[in-house]
Image (cartoon, rainbow, N blue to C red):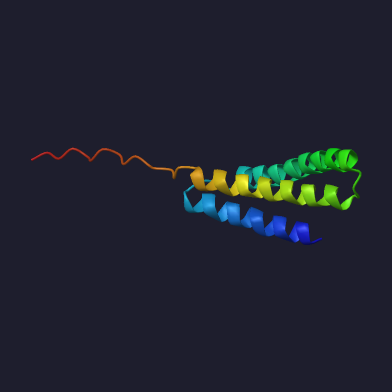
Length: 98
């Protein structure tokens, strides 16, 4: 439950970062969720391998999954901060006759 609350706040934060740069936040919010879940699954998989090799409990798997989720969150914030702001070109000035 706590992870869902953190994910909601993280997606809002990423959305605010990219909206301040003049971009729409929807795709970046989706990227945040996918990076969080994907890295959490990869972390759990790696934790499962470590737990099997070292004959330790399932706590190792959960810790690796949390670290993976944190890595995914960090990547999503890094991507959002590295997006350049949109710049709008000014139309040419109207001609003056006189």
